[in-house]
Length: 341
Image (cartoon, rainbow, N blue to C red; front, side, top):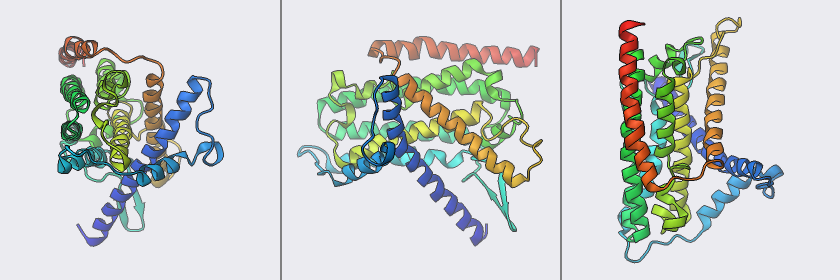
């Protein structure tokens, strides 16, 4: 790999990182506007036209607020918790294919940071590391409410990662690869995996809600019982990191679902439009982000529509419903591949 290729990859990493932060920032604005729409309110409308500068005002407030570390907290781990949460959220996008190749002069730019042949396993590894940020933060706070929230987060993530992993096995059986690039390429035209794995997708998206701690699975930060959950003792930008990590995880989860089940950057008749490959690639990127924004809206829609579960209901759903359904889906996929396909 030459110097130019290294610089291109570095530029791509920076661009994806900045886009992730920008989308996380404006997801907070979008969430408040969506909530206002559902509740017949106006939402943020003071900072800038239609309130579009509200995320910048919130970010400035986070940076300028007093930073407090509780006297009896573990100071080092108290800082490591939110740092680990935001880091694992950001590195998940490294294996997502954002589009086909762009040709600029003699350089061919692959719109993917790295195409490893175990991309799906990488995503699951990063997701499983994310819970450590929550656990460390809750434990280091030396606060019983924070600790209870962290314990809830750990048990919830472990429970739903099992169902998510089992749901993805069926998809891997039909695709025969762990590479996200190859999975996206196989969905050219209308060959989207949602057609072949509707039950697997349903299980996956429910588990995605649980993994990102979104309503109705937001028990780790349930205000009615835990004050503020695992980040009760946090203030300033360390609290901002936890909040940002949730929205970045939502963005990455949406990108993964769009790539695995809805064709990624593929769209119908993409090579029948008579456009150059570069323009097809650019349109593919736009289509992928449109799918991602739809899923982000869906996350918000569910939050302001469905009440949260009780904790026993949450665990029953994970262990007694989703895991058996995922195993049944594996068996059905095996039978379909053996006798029908």
